[in-house]
Image (cartoon, rainbow, N blue to C red):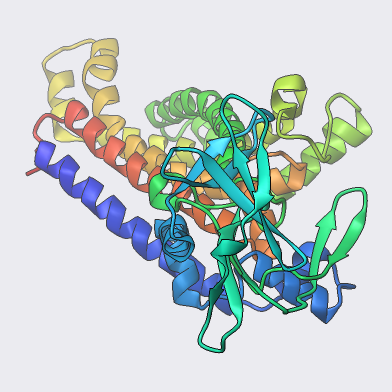
Length: 432
């Protein structure tokens, strides 16, 4: 079993690598302009180019993928000539600094042709001084300097170059400054070290947003799972035990109807009935990331939608499995031996009838995550599915890739859990 689990974990790593590369290439080749998706359709060409440079999107494709996977701090450290360090400010924001030999942290900014160094002293206020000795001549004889800027990027300044930088400031709109850097390397540690970068759409660290959104999605999926599985298994077994009866026909037809109706149709009907007509529950709306904890009633309709759609499929699978088990030779032998109906059902039939539903349930965890994307978009629920949908629509590759990795881990992980549960339900199954 240990060797089997180890092989599955290695397969998980390989799958994550291939999926990340595929998502990156698909996002790159898909139509659309990430700058216009994020900033709006009225940005000028100059503003668009400035945004792409600041986000590092003007770099070659292979380099951007390497930055996302392995981080960019190692490359930027070579450019700056000092080790780089990420800290968290008193306000809770991440900040990147270069580290001097004495352990003090330093960043730079350009003022005219002067390099101003900002040194953070642990026991006092920041120290600001002119650091023009860091200018170096390039092959053309022009002074250049690589340093860490105030915007958490390693940047290259060039003397006597009037580069216009456009930046969007909330509340102030577009701000134009001159004498800006000619090259940017946005700093991040990379996905393998837990830092897939910042969202191009929101400017927030992807890891922090994913944690909140994944928590909300797990609450939604877990609530639906807890609601639907006992109900579907019990109704499916009841239908299987009463094969051919009116109860069986009602449950089977009802399950088939619920399973073929798409999630968005079910969701829209529930919004119309429960929210618009009866006014009992909130319908589709835009909620904050903490809304599920502040407004538990907003969970009811999304959970009910997932429950109704999933209920029919699991019910029919459980019914078919129970019918097959009840027709098997060992069940007939148990009846011939004179065992009671209750003992045959609960001692022998139920355990074996659960084999197929358990497999389907674990497979449907992946389907459930796909259904969650649709349900979250319909109801405006602030979960992982809505986050991925918004990222895909705006070509936010950092958020899209990190979210895809979460889905890969869930998909492969649930299959591993299903295989382990299988060995407990059927001890004859062994994995080499």
